[in-house]
Length: 220
Image (spheres, rainbow, N blue to C red):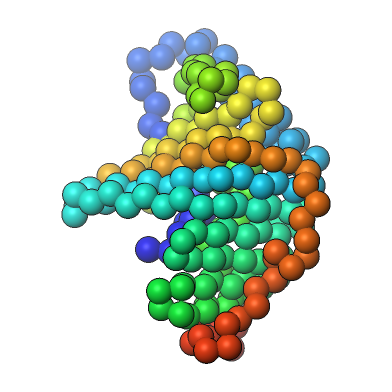
């Protein structure tokens, strides 16, 4: 499973017991929150954070947990580092390096569907989903807004999603999604630092000289 499948995702089925006035009010407030999250992204120059991903594979009864570092910079630059994998893009090319396999996969960002941009997970919520405010919760001691997102397409692969948005920073700090196979994918973002000076070298990958290289751009 390639880390960070950030086509990320979205939606949770809403209870039909809500009255129309309450549902409309919750939906309006949810859209206001999402607009603030998107405005935050537009103003953000860079970000560094820790993340934890937990994937529960229901069919096999297995749980996989991965921890790592995430770097974002304006212009669709990002870098994701874990103990076994590094994913890097300069906004045009994406490199996926597996340390155990000593293999580098190279692809074009706009062709790499398996690795959508992390900003889509943290800031950009697709128009294919309808948001609903579920309430407020304390997360790591801070107030967050909890949103459910309803897929407009009943055949969507991600059938339920919930996001936690920090009420003071307007940053997404947790995402929980459930797919059509009932697998649960959860991302937790912490130790967030905004607008750091991040070097260009972070967003270009130097291929190890003895690694296997698979360049998917050659087949396009």
